[in-house]
Length: 522
Ligand code: HEM
Figure (cartoon, rainbow, N blue to C red):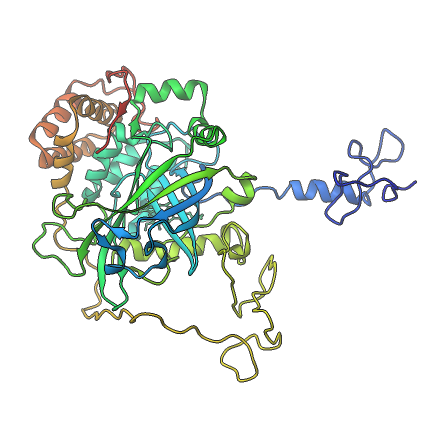
């Protein structure tokens, strides 16, 4: 009998991808049982050459992640008002309406198998499979970001990732970038505090960070920010606790999420929005389009709009989590962009990288495709899986317009939102930068042990750095809050200067932080 001939084939019989049953998966085909091997051994060559291509390019940031499926359930309201006053997006309209979701949580800086205990923001990306097509809310756990202009993102990421020569992460490069980009100081204050190491993915907040718009049926828009609040509570780690976990388990956050869902303890988050009228708000001392700023809760209360439950683990990590592609451009009717310069830059970047990372037809993969019908005239490109043809469509008409058949434009529902924009084309930073004020407010809101941990992390991270970097960081802290500046200055004056700055962010010797984790909200 040859390799391809077999009489017994059942459901679980091993085959190759041509459907040929594999009768020997233990030995390659050789001349005699000691070799040499022959080149026509198709099964072996298929198997090994597919294996050689098992990895696709890793995400350039947010390489390490974990995902889960679930649903979003709308309250039908935004606070006390019907949601329809602000947005016509269908997923928010009816109380109890459910929309399937897929969520990917991640760390930002290091690669696919890096420890999940590192000091880093965490990604919180949600894909809503709505009846109008997909909406992606690509957020982080923290409510603000380091920079406010997209052109700085590649430099920021270069500074935060390992040194191009030594391949070691280097606090000096991190603080050098931050000290020379004062808008980072609020985010640095949060990331160097215990809020920089969430205990796991279930017990952290989420935020859209950037400013978006909501548009209602009359074509009226408001500015909006999104927040996820975990029903499990919030829990962050001290540096010492993180190091203890990392010593025995560098997958703890993925494991925590997976195990909780397997046990039937489905994590839940409530979705809240803050709303502002759609204008420049000259009365505020910050710009509403600046993603380094919090919108004060007393002026812009958080309005509850729905909840999300994650109740199903992926069946295959690569197919669903690794190949998932989220982007800030993926909005549905009733949701819109603002002029936030970070958001505009991000919106180009995501689908651009995904065409490279996953391939031109990444939107045909089941995890990325909408759960509603798709009918386009796009075709070709590597790995095209099917034609996006409507039932009964004339297959010859892959263009529009036509009187011979083919696809037709959709009707506009609701009044189109057409903002009027005029101004000089410039390359300038925004006015009202207010780089350190909110950092001071955040510092003053911290509990004493959080302040101690922040100072301890900053001192140990900055101590081996160039004095000019230290001085700039002290000046920023002094500008933010007198006590904050003084404590950082004193800490650095008393810190031993020896040692290498080439350590993970905030990783320090002689940790003095309390040994408890915090469980609270901010
Ligand atoms: C991932 C670019 C700012 C959240 C990514 C990826 C790129 C990118 C290229 C990889 C995407 C992929 O391979 O699928 C940028 C640029 C930014 C920016 C250019 C600034 C101009 C932000 C901000 C946030 C954020 C402010 C938080 C609100 C995320 C998340 C992911 C991600 C959560 C991972 C998505 C996933 O799980 O697949 N970003 N990003 N990014 N980014 Fe950004």
